[in-house]
Length: 272
Length: 272
Image (cartoon, rainbow over all chains, first blue to last red):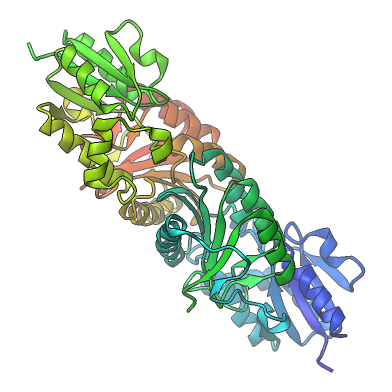
């Protein structure tokens, strides 16, 4: 049997999902839940500890004390400002070396992964723990994008890829050629909510989500789940297009059922 | 004395501002107010007519009937979807030629300006009617950006310029290197409002606003006014940086007073 798995848990449904997968596979886990990011449901009935993001020394000690050798980073963490982070000596040493302010989110996550490996942990990607983790190329449910939606997907891909290169965000919503909204730090759920009030008459828009080119694949994959589908439907969208073979889909069968029921297409596009 | 000036009025304070400027200069105006865009205050006590955006034939007839020869397009117009636009025969002819859906906002405005000139109108820019229309390079009020703010301005300029090239939006808010929000169709005021809830601890962020490279200079300039300053202060920002020599400032003296009073810097950057 594999060693005890450490799950460093940020927000969203992915960390809990990994807990369940490990349970089903009979694998031991220890969850290090990031304060202000992880959801309480993530740690229910599981060996765990809460830890401040800036308390690196404490976090490392907790992982070691709980005999973790293999680690996965899962779930979103909003990057705080340096004063709010209150780094301990261990985090301060890392940031002094890499330069906290100079780094984008991608650079920061890569540096954290490297640091964890230097400390002797094996860092793996969430996808390595999931069955059928990625959205494949092509439509996933019963519906396909029509010509207008296809054009919106192409426009959205162009904008989202460019934003990704700038390390700004991963998602964009396009309706009939108009970019209704662009994701920055607020996250995809918030983007969906605010675009509900910006939609135009006629055929609804499309959510397009891609991986940032510089993204550390073991730390921060674009992810969709049932919640994404439900919010997209509430926003009046006609479908969702994600980058194929890199976007993680949680509860694939449930997601497909939810999309079909809501009348949304869900399609994997031009994966790398 | 110059001919009667036609003001095709969209949203915001700029159209009314032009009315006042013409009044002060003793110049006759006729306002063609776009339904759903122009503010009622814009047309108060001024010869005017309201017109649907898609009713091009009616609009042209109104301008001719009111002896307009010189025209200015002022204020924002949210581009509707084609079904909501309900184009009359005249607008439909134009859109058939240029392809409504294929065009971004910039392309559409350029086409409209060209069409108006083909119809015999002289189209001028709002800046030609204003005294000290543009934000010059350097600080406008008493305050200057410090090093952190300067770094945020540079990051914001890079993101905003790239978004402009994609014809998405003109504005971005950056705090301590993090892009808090990016403007798409919602406009700068809405961007400011939603970023109030996303700010981090520590030194506040910066609003950066640039012209889109493809922008028709006679139709759609980046504009700031007292409202921008007040909203930026409410959002907890430390200052505003705009592209110098292309960004229109309304009520320059009032804007500077408002910025100084709110403790915000206002700076023109790297104008083209």
